[in-house]
Length: 401
Image (cartoon, rainbow, N blue to C red):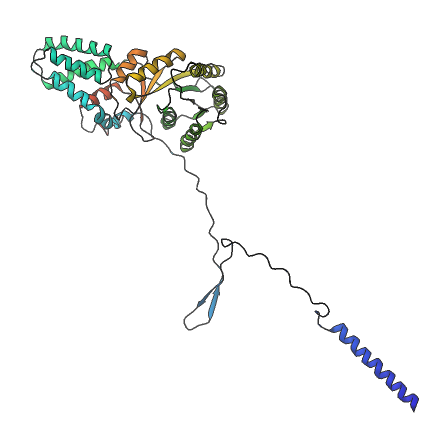
């Protein structure tokens, strides 16, 4: 009996152990050492945190959870390339601006010439009016002498006759027969090269940009050379002009050799087969010999690659006779082929057109008649003289060539 009880105890112990083993084998995971939760990610910046879900309760219905709104995608807008208008007829369209600034000269001369009796005092006033308008002493004397002779022949004069007489003589002094062609025709696979020169503050870089616009408006492919490496903003300014009309700009770091920039611009122009390369140079004081010599170097280096077809001297028309002295010094260093007169619509005295042409023997080819990007115009002698005399024609300011 005792043996039978011992067997029962042993079986019971084995059964308990078996049940315990099964419990350990099939118990839920997580026993033993507690598992630490994963570290929380740092909070996202305010701008990057997704918006919380939005709950919307429909009327009489359950609440609907909407997904967070998507973050707006930032779109970088590339500025569109502008298509400038052609240069033809610009001066006719801008004539009213010219008339407003120059009409005082014409009115004064016409009033004096229309007097019944022209004595020496009146002739002195006519001469003074012309000189004050920056016509220059030599041209003024020529005009007054011719006027005296014509008036003696005419005798009595109507206002119309006085206007016609003055128009004829002023037009002769402005030079309607001068060749004002801008030489921008490429030579086979080599582009035409335009070198823009002048003293500080005359508007060279702006004129360069406006000229590029005008040529592109005429259907030409233009490349710009930023050879003004002394002024930090010059290359950036020219880059802005180029970007607006799709013209490539060759530039280097501030302080780079201007001749090197000019050479590279022409080389790039040949490679790209453009029609015209316009090189903007640094402003130079006409009294500084070293700077003027460097300008001559820029021109010589360009000529190793291509012909310099135009050397445009940019003059501020408001500087008057001081601008004449600047022009003479530049003409001694480089062969000036044309003048670009800026600010002719402001306080400038239009006689500077006559005097600068007479002194240099080169024509005024371009005039700046406003602040707008398309306010650079090919110079038209007849439009200029008519604006001075205030000879308004019907629709004159709107007429285009």
